Length: 92
Image: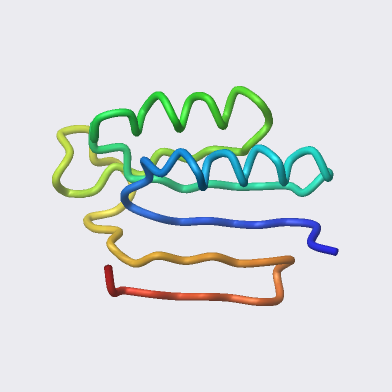
């Protein structure tokens, strides 16, 4: 059984993935999401919807954003499952 997921991604607008994460919360899985909020249509609303129901969220504006505070650029995609399994991707 999975206890935690850490997800870092720069674009996130897929409602089907949002729904899967919401379903995962029902099983008590802890989810942390670091997202480059660059004002894609629907992205800020999706981020807020997830953080409102228990996802730990960290906005990470990239250099393309006037709100950049954390990272110059965060283009890679990372998922860490249970602090043990790690997936790192740079392709789209």
